[in-house]
Image (tube, rainbow, N blue to C red; front, side):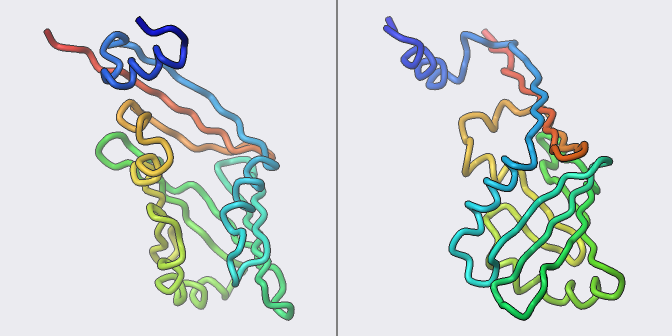
Length: 175
């Protein structure tokens, strides 16, 4: 018999949560701008070409991303991101964000996207003016135990917060 909560959770995980078959739940997770920026700061730490990235969630499923290059003579660049398509589980777990710069810079910047793909984390890819975020690939890397139970995920924004709405389900066990 498991002697503490940690042991019970380990046992449940090993069994594929069969003792909780049929369970489902939802989470509404507002993430502050400050927390987003702490996560991004860790992700770009040690990157030679980027000194700083700041994320500013805006209402209406939009973000402003301010990238400060490491080169002293290059000013910070503001990139507008908008959620273009939400992931659909399990068939198409890809979050699509569309990006744009100030008028006239989009076409120039798009020429460099293929060169940047080699520097992005596994599961994140640039395709012309879109950022494709493979939630399944990121989940396999950062939360492999939870990924099979994700039924839906939606990213929204309000002023100064990204909001993640998540649904999970533990399938029925057939006898």
